[in-house]
Structures are given as structure tokens and as C-alpha cells.
Image (cartoon, rainbow, N blue to C red; front, top):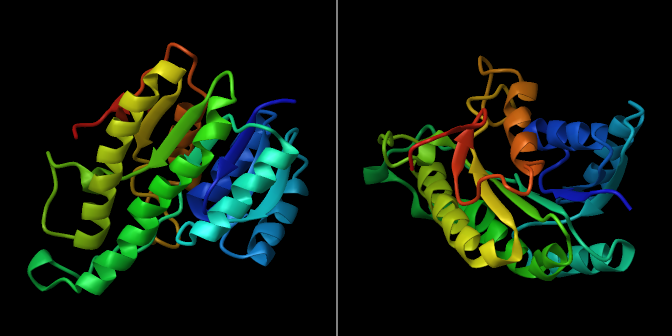
Amino acid sequence: MGTVSLVTGGNRGIGRETVRRLAGRGHTVLLTARSQDAAEAAAADLVSAAEPGEILPLRLDVTDAASIERAAATVAERHGRLDVLVNNAAIAYDTWQRPSGADLDVVREAAETNLYGPWRIIQTFAPLLRASAHPRIVNVSSEAASLASMGAGTPAYAVTKAGLNALTVMFAAEFRRDGMLVNAVCPGWVATDMGGAGGRPVGEGAASVVRAATLPDDGPTGGFFRDGRPLPW
């Protein structure tokens, strides 16, 4: 069996392009979405492009612990391991808010998807990742989360992604003994439904994610990168 990869939020945007590119490298890619219909529709579109790898739809709602458990059980039954985990699903690019007047309900909701979701997923899939000879975790973050350049904008998004960056460092330290590479990646401002018009092409953003997902065994861990270059925390 070749490399088995899972991408959350894989039905659109950067996640979808990441699925396509990993399949293009011959991976068996589990394209996940909050609904089975959305996952199946996206997978069908990508499979029709005749990528050399296999693309399999899988329902996974990162805010639902039971959904995560079911997805992990499916991966365990069908594949017995997971080689690459891409935590891509995210919400609440709240450009309309500033911290002094931020709606904390929006922040809490963002945290469920952007921080607690990846945390739950890594905890649940850790045994399957440890069963891999070359495990990789990629947390899709943002330079908006960098304390070195953070401003007053997008407080829900920036704070929850900063938390994801911290989680990246912690899991990298814990999993180092397992040979697991855990990194955060900023795809840059990308023209997607979330990013809006005017950003870089989605392929350029996804390339950074794929680079981190396919690092050699002596590659970095516990880092924060864009286009293969380190970003300040």
C-alpha cells in the first residue's frame, strides 16, 4: 500500500487542491468534509481528472468528537495506518472585528474548528500515525497568527491560529521520539472562498502544504513555514 493521507476540509479551496496534488504523487487520499455528499461530490470531480493516486471521500466534522472517532475507525479498518494528516479545515476570517469589540461567541466558534478540532483529530489519529514508518502532520495556519507581525485585525482567526501554532510546537516535541514531523504552514493570502479575490492562485498556497506533507525523514519539525521558508512565530 502506498502513502495514506487525510485532508480535513478537502472539498474546496486549499484543501481540495492539496488532495489533488497528493493524489498526483500517488497517495491514497482521504478527502474529508462535514457532509458525506460534499466529500463524494468533490472526490468524484477530482477522480475524473485521472490522478494516479486514489481519492476516497470520508465524512469528518472536526467539531464533532463522534464524527472524528468514526472516521478514525474507518481509516483503521481499511488502511491500518495514516501516513499524512493535513489539518486544513478552518472558519471565521473575521475581517470585520477588532479585539475591543469582538463577539466572543464568534471567537469560541472559531476555536472549535481552528484549534480544538485539530487537537481532537491529532489525539484520535495518533495511534494510526504511529503505525506509519514516515508520519507527517501539517497544520494549515496563517501569518496572521505570527506574534511578530500581528495587528488588530481578524481577532478570532488570528488568536485561534496562534493557538494552533503553539499546539504544533508541543506535538512536535512530544512526537519527536516517534519520528513524526509536525509543522505549521502558512499558504499565504490565497484566492479562495475564505480569502476572497485578489490573492495568489490556490495552487501556490497548496504547494506549501504539500511540501510539508512530503518532507524527507531528516526534514524539520516544530517549524512554521511558507513556501518552504521559516516564518517568525
